[in-house]
Image (cartoon, rainbow, N blue to C red; front, side):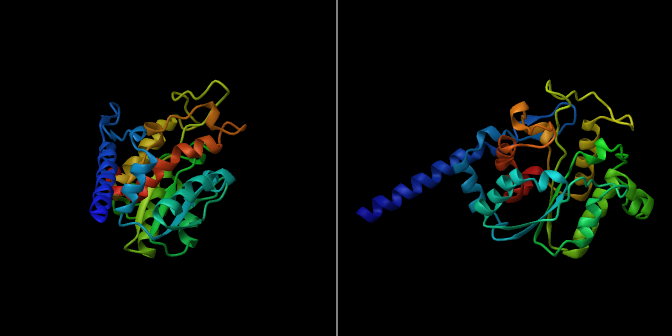
Length: 264
């Protein structure tokens, strides 16, 4: 009888967690882009445990490619969460100042030189935008321009180069992408209408990232849509996250790897 009651209790707990996990379905649509947006505030750590326990991406190796956002001391909060929830091993190839354009320290170099992994996370920096590298178009460095080397100077060309290179390195790999994030232009916040030297704003760059991922069927986490960052989430440089900021990325980024189909 005791075994029966214990078993029933476990079933009830599991069903309760499953029920709590159900609100992950996209419920809102970004009016400007037409993309569905997940309400991450409805996902508790307990729900995340359930979602990760059913993931086919447990016990995998993860390689992270990007700029300084991936290598600050505080970024360990996010990478350790992937280890904790998914029992994955994480190797970071990011370098400070790197973006996707070949005209600067480039994430393309990271893709060339990284090891074979099961999962690759492309974590977009703000360097393409801040260093006035052209955003380009989603078909840069694809079969549509015959993989023109000239296309590698754009953000889009760099993204497509990385995806192509990583798939050649491991045809069975999962590639996911985290978008560029807003930053603080001053203590007052960020003005999304401000453009860089190419005449484009940060939203334009992030939308171009999403289009590249859509074409390549790469799950994409749009931080502009889904993460509410405030002054308290940034370091004194107004550009990089502090512990508060990275903590806000734990659930979205872990879910991106655990259940990537939600981000297609």
